[in-house]
Length: 157
Length: 157
Image (cartoon, rainbow over all chains, first blue to last red; front, side, top):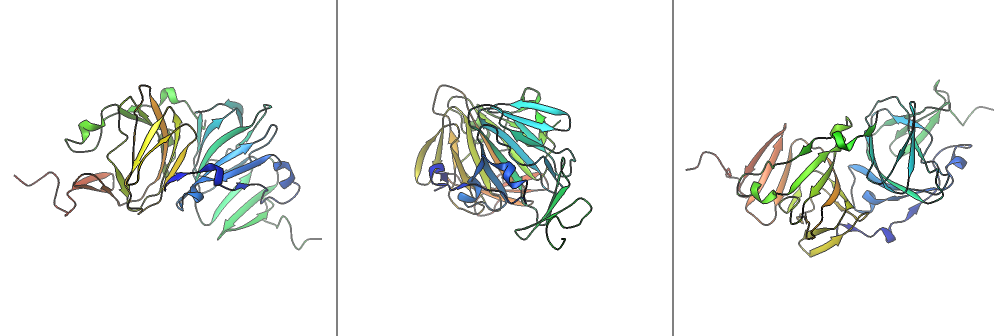
């Protein structure tokens, strides 16, 4: 049955980020709607932001297109140019390779949600605009590095 | 600027269907939001249904995943199993090759809208469940045939 029963979709919490960034994602969760519906060719996730929560570190994707539509409440989009408040029905597009990092912040005292669509490239790379961090995503594995390519965590003492 | 100004996105009307099916799509239009935002890897369109309008002939895609979220009003999803009324936030997924045709009907007296995401396969094929029609989509060209492969329009007299 193609209709997705959201009440049965697991609420995904936590973050793949290393510390201290993972802790900064408190209050963010998501529903993997496309996965729940058996889709494989792109991701379709509803992101849920509690008051004060961030959607991610500010980032841009090297190979993947990304599309967002706000579905509930107010989300503040942050980019190089500054902040834009977005409301239900408002949408934004982030073409692959566009080096202008973005993320969303819920600055209200009510829950906010947006739908995010992303193509699924393998491998993929993302750069985080405001911190010295990048990630390579390959075969389901995320490898975080500094921007000079050295491992973010690992064999350094 | 990634935020999409919907008021500046052209409203696409009309249908690629041959007659008599094109005329059956009266009252349907769409905003090509992803295209407007410079995306190429998937389509992200907001479909606008006036009262009584259909989103398409009931169809299924052979190679493309499709995802829908209702964004305004009420849309009735029609599939082999029957009808399901969907409201804002409700979503459905149609995996590639799932041979259960679907379309949406606005049975209310107010405008209804949904966001539809589709991957972009080239070539692609779609089968229309309720009529003797299929389409091959290749390099931007649509070729309609009967289900036995003979041209729907063309060299027959």
